[in-house]
Structure formats: structure tokens, C-alpha cells
Length: 560
Image 1 (tube, rainbow, N blue to C red):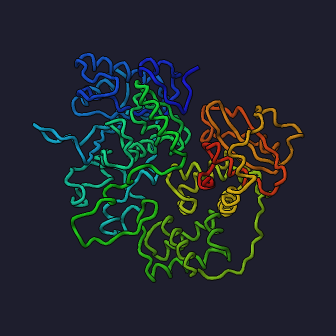
Image 2: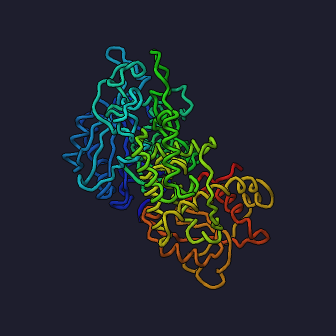
Image 3: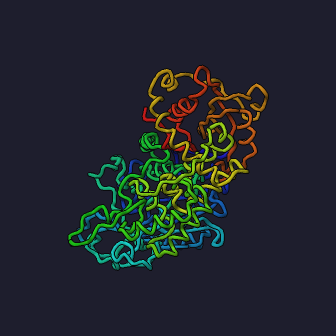
């Protein structure tokens, strides 16, 4: 049995890495000591050159062993040993180098007889060059191009760009062609002592936004992220916020205690600390640049009269008398709307047109429709609504998207459909998406009532005894209630249902590798509705806040 997940282990990295099962890790990130004499808590950063190199060979071989065949390894290292460690990773450990990225930061370390240290090397390694995770399509990873931000060129790829080479000047004053976040020199400010995200106990704290980019592009939700040099805990905190499993190793017991405190304060779905785009958060000394309207990191074109008229005409001719929400929930109707926008020459792409449609709807400018559709009840959606919620959480966390953003992005919406289909097969994309909208609409009532008694009492109330999920398929469980699913590591999901037995059977037959990779749901706590059979969703909300499960949509959690 290897080391457990979602935990930071104190000890020497070589000893602890040997305790991890072979090929158990999806992504490893290592920011080892640079051997430049830094004053750590316990570690001696003044080893001889040969000793440091031999030690590096040993721990990188250990990382290679625990990494899956499809896994990825990122290494952060300074100038002094960058070349040596790159060769060790390739020639000794057996990794393949995919990218050599430069992290450029402000607040660099001052040097008396040399240029200030203001960059770190980031090596991107894989085990198999034909099979590895690279989520280049993730719009939370892609960045706006100069064509979009400066020139507003209609020929620009609306999804932005992935990194390429660049030279660096002073970032705030650099021409758009000279330095931008899309380049392979990544600009994230070092976490200086005055920064709010500074933890204060470790002098080499990585910014969460930098780790967020690595985690998003090289892993998927619920996959396992390892950091063998946990340090200030940034890797684990970012992994938890982005819905990944995590595992850390740290030599210092004091650091472990502080890391655990930091991780406990982080919640799944929390925004990453620090600005996502440092260039846009810092003032420029030049003037006259027109502000570009942004949405989820993407520029939206101006909604002038001609664009607005084109969107409304496309909607009128394709909506079949239905609402804007219905259009976004039905892939075929939305595809027709997108085709109509394209035919009319409206600037943008599917995401932009869908977002502008919602903006026009909010302004009350869409034509009134005569069609009155029968609304689905939660009892009718019971067989798949839980799948909609989990899919929303996983996609929103991975893309940093709201539900509206998911429905507006064909790529994100398709990923949402695929996850929901794995969890509750047999239903249409429209049904999954409409259920997510219905859940969001009821959330305000749930959060409000959750603050009242007797629901709030469940924050401290002892839960019923848990049992194995496989034992909950008898007729006695054929009733409504709220339940908590867990494995040996942590709570996974808090749900409500009108028929718990049917929900259990569907959960047991679900084959969703995105939600339960390498794990098994082992325990379940079931709570019958008692005196409030029609307010199960309120009890569900309270237990979400109490248990902090990985898969519940964080938007639904009440502030208690």
C-alpha cells in the first residue's frame, strides 16, 4: 500500500518517494533546492557539486518510477545547474523534454557583482512523447494575442494563443510584439514580502498562477499531482483549488504544519491567488490605449448597433420560439444560431456570439417569444441532475468558467456533456444542461434557508453511521434523502435524491474515469428527509459546507 492522497508527508524525499506506488502519479512538479547556499529550515543548500548531482539523479529517478506512463514532470531550477539537471532528466532518468520555458519575474534577487536574478528555468518533461496530457485547448491556459488586444483584428484566433519565443523588455512598457503572456518566457511576479498571498514562512514561494497554468495544461480534474519538495505548499494549494488530488513531501516538520494550515484554508473552486495576467493588472506608462472588454480572460468585441442587430436577427430566425437559455441548452439549435451569425458576418466566434446573446437578453432587447414550455420538475430530473452538478464543477474548475461560460463555449459544453453522460448515461445534452440551470436557479433559496435552524444545526450534529455503498441496494433504501459519498481519503460528493436505491445503483454502474480515477467509493452516509422532505436541497447545501467534498459545485455552497 503506497502513501495516501491529499496529504503532505514529512520526511526525506528519497525515502518518501520510495513509499509511493509505481506509476501512481499523473503530474509531478519539483522546485528543488538550487544549491546556491539558501538558508532553509533544515536542508543544507551548500553541497559539493558532485554530491548535489548524484542526489539529483536519485530523486529524479524516483519521480520517474512513480509517474504514470502518460504522466508529465515539470522541473523548476536556477541557472547554476539548469543544464546539468536537464541532461540528468533525459540521459539518466529517461524523460523526454517537450519545452524549455523561462519564468521571468519582477522583484528579482539583487546581485552586487552581476545582473539581478529575475528568471527561473521550467523544464517540461514527459515519459512517452506520444501519450501525455497537454490541454492546449483549455481556454484558461490560452491567452489573448496582440491581434486581439491591440489591433482588434478580425482574423485573430478568437481562442487566443499558446506560448512561443520572445525577448523581454520592461513588461509594462514593452511593445505587444516584444513581450506578452503568450510567449514561452512566462511573466509572473515573484511572491514578494509585501504581497497578500505571501505565506511568510518560506522565502522561495511560487505564485499560484504559475502553478495553475502548469496544472491545467498537464493534468485533468481529479488526477494526482505530486510535489516532492513541498516548501510553502503552493503546488498543493493550487491543485486543491483546481479540483485535483495532491500529494506533498517536505523535510521540515515546521513547514509541513504551516502547509497544512494553508491547504485547510483553500477550497475546491477557490480562485488562485495573484493576478491571472500580470501585464493587464499593472499600469502602463504609455497612454491612449483603448480598454478591451474581457470575459473569462477573452476579449469581446464592442456591441455596436450593427452587431446587436445581427445577433438579434440570428436569434429570431433560429430560436424556434424558445428562450436564449433553451437555445444554449440545445446543441442543434445553438449550432443553427452560430451558423446564422457567421452568415450575417457578425464579428467573433461561437463563444462570443453566445455571450453577446446573453448580454442582449439581460438588457431586455430580445424579442418576446410565444412558446410556453412545460418546466421539468426536480423529481423528473432526479436520474441525471447529480451528473449535471458534478460535470459543472469539474468543467468550471478546470476552465475557470461560470455555468454561462460553459454553455456559451461549444468546447466546454461538449466536455460537460461527456462527463454527465459517463455518470448518468442515456439522457440528452439538453436535459443535462437544463438541469444545471435549474440547480443554479434554486441555489439562492437553498443558501438562504441553510442559514436557519434546524438546518444550520447539521454543521455540528453527528452524522448517522456510514455503511458500504454496495449494501444500500435493498428495498428499505427506496426513499428520498440526502447522502454523503466518501472513499478512504476524503468526502467525494453530497447529494439529494427522491429514490436513494436508484441513485446508488446508477452510481455503482457509472464508469466515469474523470470523476473517480484509480479510486473506489467505499462509504456512504444516508440521511432520510425527516420533517422536511421538500427541502432536501437545503440540507444538502449545509452538508456541502460541512464536508467540503471534491465534486459538488462550489457555487452551491452557502456562506455559513
